[in-house]
Length: 395
Image (tube, rainbow, N blue to C red; front, side, top):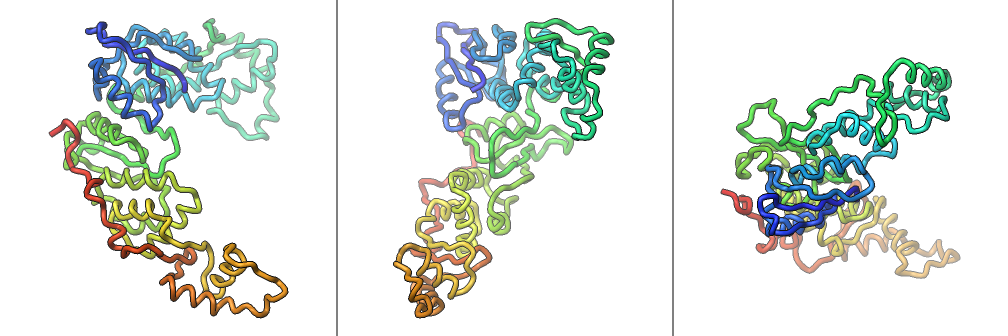
């Protein structure tokens, strides 16, 4: 957690306050929305949350107290700050103070350029100070060879003598001609991957100009976030939505099996949610299950992911002999005696098990479905899980 914000409805202070942690944990997002509803807060776009207080270890954020912000703006700002190292936080706070910023939109924009400034908190080590300034002026990185030739003391001395530093509570700030550009326009959040995700989707209205700003979704996310991002992108229903799939961390068999452009975004999101909880071995197993079952939709893949316990899977084996050897020597089902090794017929046993299980080999290894339903029945969606095409509360 980066900070807590005490939020209220400025028009109706009698409604009370809500204290929200930011970034909002994904599993708590829907609960936060419900918590804010009785206060008349949480609009998808409007800055309806009045910030009574900011609590946490980033004092510069107190500059946005007594201002209004949108819930998702605060969440996005917290996610940006969560990725900062201690010096980047110093740069952010120093420049927020230097520019006297009091809007959450301004602070979001500052997170994209504050790394260009130099902040001195200790004048005792000029060599280290100069090297840090050198790295700042070179985009934060340099080769080891280049750093060997850097005279940090000279660079620091030149900086101190040639520029006017501004004293702030966070150190002496040298802005290095940084310009506060508008990465965030007040509605469309810039593309930013915060947490591990399985798929990145670019979202825009089908009727918007090609060069219009897009919304970026990193799946899986709470369904409410999908709908809120759609509203921010000017999309009133799923039929008006234009998707572009940008990156995928899904098993390659899933990417090959599905026609993503014709899939429901809700189904893709639920599929990603089911897969995200799987271990690396289980995801490999899912890839094998997809090759065996040949699903055609994201909901069918989700059903496979949720029922992997009904599959038997051995990674890497490609022949009946290898499968039989694995089962006898490594599966733990038998007490293998090395002294009797020449008497084991691995291939015969492997063929016997394959016939019993109906298993097959693919590029992943050996996989067999052991369930009582047919694979087609297993992949049928539960009617209670089906999703409509209209967003809650929207036409």
